[in-house]
Length: 305
Image (tube, rainbow, N blue to C red):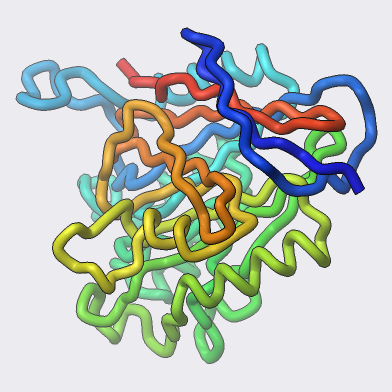
């Protein structure tokens, strides 16, 4: 079984950092293969661009602009995966009036592939979320929310796999603890399980059973909590696990100008990205695969203006 190196390739400098890696199990070819990951988080029902006179985000964002950028990238790239890290709902009158229907319909039009749930996606209760699912032509994943005895049991899966150009990609979701953050009557019997423990089990399944070449976590845990050392976060998740290649984050509205790389518990490196909030930015990470290597083109995230 061949070894792979995980190399960060910064386009501006062509600097390469070699990292010992994992085996590529789904293909054997000399030709390089490219996978483009696009992602959003914490859009919070922002359909329109911000007003021109907005003090922080003048004329920024908007679904129409995001859709145009995504369409253009799909014309340029053959193997694109479009993901969302939660908090799709709440934040504008669109959600108050339509309860999430418009958000799901627009995401479906943009051909999102997969999303996870954030705490605000429970704002109309599990019943309200469930009622809008017919408008979503994409699936939801959450591995550490146990939805047994709720309407979402069996509908929201722990993970989903995709095959793009012979590369097998496993994507799983993790959510923040709901107790104290969301009214119990809204999430009902949903049980929160330790995200690090769950991620350890899920990644083992994705790596050893599903034979995935690329493992992505859609996380709504939050990027970091400097004053809450015991609270799970993306940084802690990366450090405490292995086999995760990319963590796409949400919840803390952290804007990373470009992805960051951290070391996991076995000394391998994990890419972490989060693109702020409100649909102002679109994350992009390109993974390249060949027989002996895997690396990323680590360019800046896309600002939607």
